[in-house]
Structure formats: structure tokens, C-alpha cells
Length: 583
DNA sequence: GCCGTTTTCGGCCCGACTGTTTTCAGTCG
Image 1 (cartoon, rainbow, N blue to C red):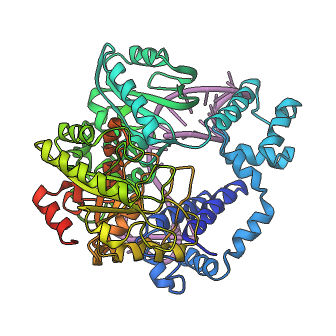
Image 2: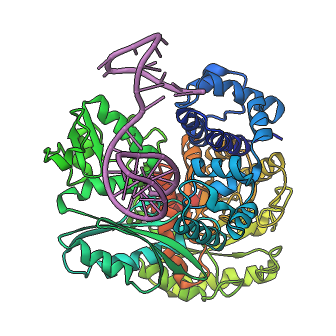
Image 3: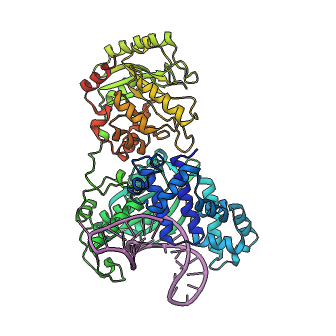
């Protein structure tokens, strides 16, 4: 069945295959850009596949690609894709994903040595035939061999929750090095993306050499890939895997320009540069300069930049307001007003937490004390329901006792409200795991799907909507059940879910655990557009889980979430009023 | 293939580093 994600994948594949066949690089770029545009588009392209005008409203989609979308919606593929696919072996795209191998090299391997897969490439290395290619010396071959091993070992992208602690440790350690004035992590990590390709660290320093030496010598560095005057690249140990970490050093007064440049996204930067050129300016990682058509870069000729030391000055010089990193994805952030995004400090309540009654590690009181310590006014105790047997879900009798225990704790612990709730399973048919009489006794109901996570999108949509329409439900917990990089989860019609949620005053959860981040950023944007409220919850099982909230806030920010749209930022009174409206 | 505050053709972002070659192509971000 045609799906948006498959269409996007096909367009991305088109770009790779075109590259390999040596097509016009701007055409390649057009396909890659269209794929991104569709990913971030607010309209459902498949729904409007018969309306080319509507499709062409999406920036990056023109006549030709609009036709291909129509073709795909009708037949599940499009001719040009199938033609290229017949020509370009599947395995080559995988070969091209090896770091250091680009389209030119892979194409040469393919045409001259008939290399079509990573295994073919390994054989060509072993039997020495790879050396026959031009510009293919011993060192290059050794690097390729190493890169194959790395890509097999490092696997896919690293979840943000694994990369962030390492990045913060590096920033803390390198801050102490002689000459270092400003330091920050940049890249997709600063943008709060759910997964990270590599970690980028940026330093402004008066002693570049010292910084690069300290970096290369840092604990955990397993291989040095690049070491220049301004740029070093290493591979570091991260758990059982490795992650690439890049360090860039710049002068103090270029820190803003460099930070902007290395934060990306690449597409956002391209937009900014295009905008700069239209204003007779040129933007690079050293600053925003007047464009003068000279070949030598302006900073090397002592040209005075228009702006360079802070991001804000550069955006302003381009007649833009400063764009929060989380929004720098080329999803229209340079057009119109930006939302006043939610901040970590706005979070005042945790509404999804487990105790030792089900699968948590803390008692009700411990849970409450930790929440209080974080300055929260409310904590909801939401242990699992009876169907979650593996999680020691509570049957009706145990839940009734548990409610009593929560009420007692609420009397006893001062300075915080402890809500009696449940994370009740949404069964495969959309019914809930307890009867209404029992649910009505609870202060808060978080309804979540835990099983049947591979059901078809139509069933998933009606299942979730049924739960949303239930008059006693407040929050839909981790609505799709996905696990980042591991489990796809449900693929419901998020637009329909969001509309139902808005209509019935049900909040959709961003489960802040970095393994979940569910809703994801794009879903949040759709939910907000429909007028639905969002909950950011840590799904607390242990004390350290409270720290996950940062990832939920980042995800919310990426989706354009403001504090008023997030129930966890509301005052105790406002929260209570909403909860009671469903009782 | 897309696009237009120099518009329907002729552009399309910019610099660092590596390896191999000896002036630069390829890749990356």
C-alpha cells in the first residue's frame, strides 16, 4: 500500500541512483530536497496526489515531481524510479553510504570493476584489484577498509540520549584547556534531533593547537581520522560502539558564524546563504561579508564582516529573527513569525510515572519526593493495567488498594499533589483495560497502546480515536509505540488523531524517554496545527528517568511547541480544572 | 528538477582536509 514514508524513501533513493549514474547534480539535489520537503509538509501529499497545483505549493516540489507523486499514489511506484532501479544495483547505495566513498568513486568502482555490493568491494580490496583504479593508493584503500568496518560496527545513527552525555563531558573537559574561551556542541545534537550522526564540538580559542591536542588525547579516543589546524576528527568509544566526534576551532570573534554553520542543518544553511546572496552578501563559517565576486574568501583578504560574533547579529543582518536551533530544518522557519518555544523550566508536573506496584523502582513517596525536589507541583502515579502482565500490571483489586495508598501518601507528603492514576492499556480494538466505573475513581487516566503495534494504519487510527473519544481519558501515552531505530510502531493517521484529540480535549503525549520520543517532532507539529494539547512525560520508572524530560522538551520544540499548549506547564489550578472536566 | 524583491532562462552555498599528484579531485559537513 502506498505510504508517505515509502514515497519519501523512493525519492531519496532516486537522488542516490541519479548521483551514481552521473546525472546533473542539481537534479540530484532537487530530488533530495523534494523528499525533505514532503517529510516536513503540513499537507498529506498522498491525499492531494490528484491535485498537482496543491502539491506544487510545497517548496521544492515542481511539475515533474508532482506528477511522480500522482503516479506513485496510483500505482505504488513511478516509471523513472523503476527504470533507474533496473539500471543501478541495490547494493551500490549501501556502498555509497560508507564514509569517504562518494558517487564519483563508487561509480568508477561499478563501471570499471563491476563492484555492486559491499562484499564485492571487500573482495576487490583483498585481491588487490581495487588498486587498478586511478587515485587509489595504499592509504585510500586502508581508509576504505577501515570505514567498512566502522560502518558495520557503528550501525545506524546514535540516539540523542547516548550522544548527549558524551558531548557534555567533552565540553566540560575541553573548557579547562588553556586559551579556550567559548565552547559548545553543535550539529544535530544542538538541534535536538532524535538521532545523531556524529558529535560536533566548536571552540573559540587563542591556542588552537592545545585544544586539538587535548581533544585527540581525550579518554575514549580510539582513532584519529583527521588532524588539521582548525579541524580534528576522531572516533570515540561509546558503549560497545563508536561514534565520530569532530572538533573545530575558530577565533573568538567568529564564534557566532561558526556556531551557526556547524549547527546546521545543512539545508537551513543553504537557505541562509541564498538569502545572503540576494542581499549582496556572502555567508560562510567566518561571518557574513559583502559579496565582491573575488575568488579568494573574504576573511583571507581582511574584508570586514557585516556580522560574525553572535548568531543573533547574523540573523538580524539578514532581516531575520534568531532561529532556535531546533527549528533549523528548512521547514519554513525563515518565513513568518516563529513560535515562542517551550523551555525546560516551564515543566511543572509529571503525569506518567510508575511505582514498585507495577514495574517501577520507587515507592509512591520516593516518586513524589523526587518530583518535589524538581519543583513540580503535581506528580501522577500511573502504574500499568492488568493486561500488561510482563510489567506486573495491577488487576482491579490491586488498583483499588493502590488508589488508597496514593490518597494516603497525598495526605502525608506536603508541597506536592499526588494524583491517583493509571497507564491503562488501549487494547487492540480500542477498548480500555478497566471498566468505566473503576476509571472514574482515578484522578487521571493515561491510555497507551502496548500490544498489537503492527496492526494496519486504518485499524490503528480507529483504535486510538476510540480511546480519545472515551470520556474518562486525559492523555494518550506514547501514541505510536515506536522505539527509535528498533520498532516502527503504529502508523495511524496523525492528522485524524490530532483532530479527535483537540475535539475531546485529550492531550497527546511526547514520551520523553530517548528510546521512544513518541510523539515525534513532525507529529507534534501536526497535533498543534489541529489545536490539540501536548503532554511531555518521562514515563518515570526510576529516579534518573526524570532527567529524560529534556529530550521531550527538545522534541516538542522541534515541533513548534509553546508552553501554553503543553499541559505539564499549566498551574496546579488549571491542570486540576482540566482533569476534573472529565470526571 | 526547481525557481524568481536582477523571473520563464540560467542560475543553483562555501571552505577544510586528505591523498595523490605536482596543481587538484573527491568528500564531508
